[in-house]
Length: 269
Ligand SMILES: NC(=O)c1ccc[n+]([C@@H]2O[C@H](COP(=O)([O-])OP(=O)(O)OC[C@H]3O[C@@H](n4cnc5c(N)ncnc54)[C@H](OP(=O)(O)O)[C@@H]3O)[C@@H](O)[C@H]2O)c1
Image 1 (tube, rainbow, N blue to C red):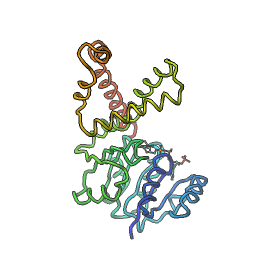
Image 2: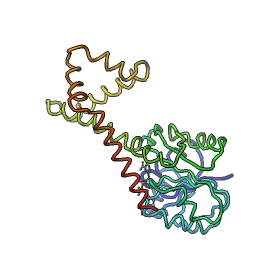
Image 3: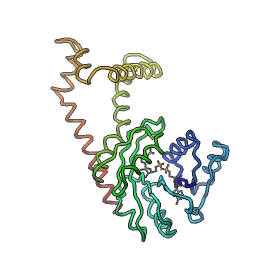
Image 4: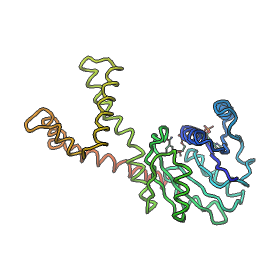
């Protein structure tokens, strides 16, 4: 039976490992940090095979290789993998900015490369994950979606450079929403609510709003329901949208993140 190999068990790698564990799928794990590997062995009751040195890992039964290391660590890892000369492997790269072509350049034979950009919500299996590959068939794409369904929702991108926008929008998404909710919470704290209660109340507000949006309203319909003519909400919304053009500010912020993603790609060339 073929297996997946995860290289790097930091924040991302551990979320993926936990997804495989829930599906009761055996995988091979490699991380150069022995203490971390021992923790993983203990936490998952020796369910997974672990290796400390990538050079000693046999790829004989490996089909998917997950690159879950930092950009500055990836080139040496690709050099080792390229030297192993294993045919028929699929490299799944999570490295922001590392291009398909660059990954291929480490291999003397044809391999399949899948670039993938999940966000933090992978932890709760709700990541909107951008995924790109130059040379996968539709059935292979479906196989990947099924095999790694614990990620959340996959969006296949048509062009590799769409990854930059995806990273900016969905990669940063949980942080942007958290910023907004954090601002609301700080206002409550200033009004005398304690920190714990402020967070609790903001989360009730957010969850309730999401539930209603999910069930019925469009974004604008919900706004119309809340903001009556000449009322209090309309006053606040006009200040945000008309006086200060909040939507332009947010679009510009996402554009800056996208531009930064392109710069990072250039550094890795
Ligand atoms: N965190 C996320 O949710 C997320 C989302 C999307 C994309 N990503 C991307 O995923 C990558 C990993 O992020 P992360 O936050 O998980 O990083 P991280 O916490 O630093 O984890 C990387 C792990 O890989 C180990 N490692 C380094 N070189 C190795 C080698 N040659 N062989 C085996 N193991 C090796 C590191 O060990 P040492 O600590 O000893 O170096 C570390 O334990 C990054 O490129 C990031 O941009 C992350």
